[in-house]
Image (cartoon, rainbow, N blue to C red):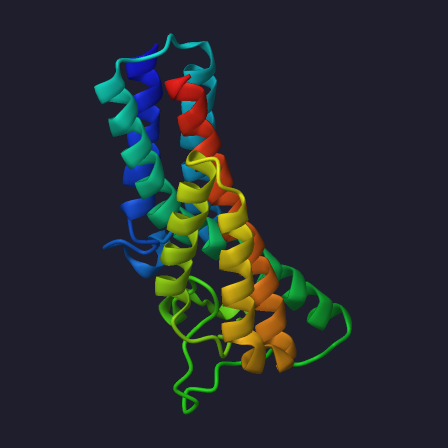
Length: 206
């Protein structure tokens, strides 16, 4: 059973490494929430298998912890993109219900998308407005690594430090309503994913 748990954990990592629009024709691209859901299912299966598995050898425990941190780091990106996709669709429905024109990307702004978002993932149907938060992808990875390591080392204060540093660094940008919304969605989703990956590792190694 321990091998099955590790296999599902590795599967979650592999799914996370697949680009959202990996070499697929435009009409064949999977929605962001499908990509995120697949990673969540794989992680959930790993947690279930780990909960009933026996305690592995020390070397295997170290390997599981390393894989879990990697899953937390890169796996959060599709999950955050999925959360943004759902939020954007909800916003689009609200605009249509109020007969408001869709918001479009300001291509001259030079701004990148929000936390972990990529401009190329936006679609016409999402009425997506890429946010003003710069460096979201890299910051998201570093944030999830820090959160996962803090949980796995039983040092929860590290999470508070990460949130405080990130909030202070982003403060000048959060006066923009779109930026504050993306900050909340991206940060919450990112931290929850890192916690889920860490919890899965804990179930497997104990």
